Image (tube, rainbow, N blue to C red; front, side, top):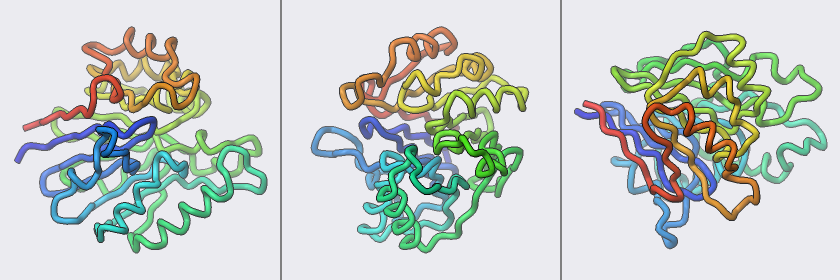
Amino acid sequence: MADKYHFLKVGCADCTIMHLGSKIVMVDCHQGDAGRSEASILDYIPNAKIDLLIITHQHYDHFDGIQTLIDNDIEVVELWESNYDRRYNDNSVDYAEWQYYQKLRSKLGAKIYHPTRNEKNYDTVGGAKFQFYSPKKNINDLDTREIHDASLVFTVRKGTMSVTFAGDASDWALEEVTSHFTLQKKHVLHASHHGSINGACLNFIKAINPNYTIVSTKSGVHGNIPDSTALQRYRNHSRKAVRRTDVDGTRIFTIK
């Protein structure tokens, strides 16, 4: 059975659905707007079951599609999420946004895990291995932290396919990754923060040096996203191509 990696066109947001053998893994969960030719996540979920849902961090554009899963009785077996703890008056994530995420996750009824740096968690999901580079276990001890510092950054590897997901990781977080790990070239890089300059860490991009960079984005939503300098960095250090979901649509890789 061929594995399929679907990088969905869901606006200035993120949702990737991987069919790994008989298992379904979803990374971030924004529904998109099918009425505007954006993908419906339901079209990529056979048998009403997701074996693993990974939420890189607790911002609407990465998790609000969970309500769609709930409304359509989609079973989620495991949920892996950032270990970030919101502080009082935390400007990096609105209180109502945080509370909404907590409400949705409680409705899922999934087993919840908080993977952190150096861990290879549950690496038999569809035969794929997961290596987590960020966040650090002690991220919540930092007084200056913000939610993008705690975004999950990890690689999924199976056979000849390796995909590195950067979530919305900040420059600080990605510099931490490059200083702590000897990174290797990957087949696909899922770019940080929808092509923002904050997250287009040059040292990280050069180290990953992917065949393809996927930028899940939509112009006109935020004035500086996608950023032209960030896009040029990805072009300069991607061996084959950079693909924008707003321009190129949903991207699908099939690996036998």
